[in-house]
Image 1 (cartoon, rainbow, N blue to C red):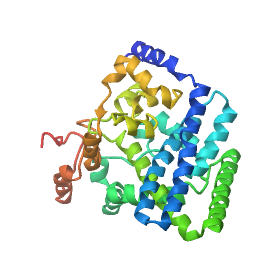
Image 2 (image 1 turned 135 degrees about the vertical axis):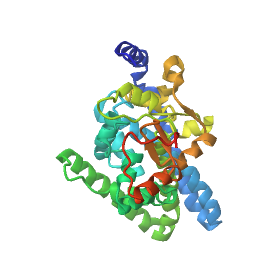
Image 3 (image 1 turned 90 degrees about the horizontal axis):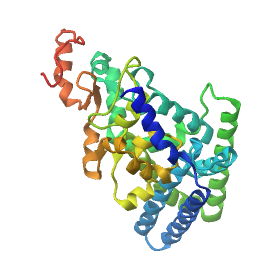
Image 4 (image 1 turned 180 degrees about the vertical axis):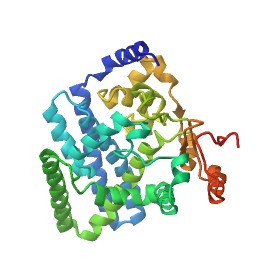
Length: 350
C-alpha cells in the first residue's frame, strides 16, 4: 500500500475518532446496572436451581465482556475526551473485570504497535511460532508450544491463569504509576470479594462469581485469538512490516449476529480498531461502512471462525497459518538428519 493511500485511509477514518459523551454515558448505563442485576438474580436463584444460576451467570458474563470493551476504550483514551475520566472509569471497570488498567494499557499499546511484526513478538500477543521456528525448536520447546495452543489450555486454563496470575503481579520494569494502579486494583478486588463473602457466604460467592469470570474470560480470549489467527493473516519481518497492512490485513472483520455484536461492543470490526485505536467502539461500524477499502478486510463468521482452532503455525513462505499435521513431514525429515533451509519446498509444493 502506497504512502498516499495510507494517508488517505487514515484521513477517511479520522472523523470517527471523536468520542460522544452522551453515547459513552449511555453505554455505562446499559452495561453496568444490567451486570449487577444479573449477578444478584444469579445469587437469588441458588435457592431454586444451580442450573438456573448458571444461566444468569452466563448472561452476566456477556455484560462483563461488554464492560471490558469500555475498559479497553478507556486504555486507548477513546471513551471520553477527558484523560482523567478514562482513567477513573477504566480503573473501575478494570476492578470488576479483574484487569489492571495501567499495566494493560501499556502492554496493549505495544500490541498495537507491533501486531504482525515477527521481529517484535511477545508483548500483548497470542504466542505464534513460524513453521521454521517450530521445526528448529527442541522437543521441550515444541511441547510447550503445543500445550499453549491446545484449545483446552488456551480457553480452559487460560482465563484462570489470566485472572489469578498474569493480571495480579507487576512487571519488573513497571513504573510507579503502574505499580500503584495494580495495588489499587488488587486491593479493591480483595475488599469487594471479602465483603460479598461476609454478606452471602464464600460458597455462594464462588458459585456465582466463578462461572461469570470463567465464561467471560474464555470469550475474551477467543475474541482476541480469532481476530488475528485466520488463514491468510498478516505477519512480516521488521524490514517488510507495515502498520496499515498489519491493521487491515492482519485483523479480521468478525461478522457477528447483531445481539452478539452489541454484547461485544463492535470489537468484531477489529481491522478498523487496529487502524485507528482512537475510534470509540460505538463508531467502529460507521467507520467500516463509510470506508470502502476497509470493507475488503478478511470477513469471518461464527461458523468460519471455528476453523481457526486448527491454525497452529505461520508458514512464512505461503503467508498462511497451517496445522501441526501439515508440517509433520518436516519433523520426520529433521529426525532423519536432513536440514530444513529457507529454500526447501513449501508445504503446498510438498
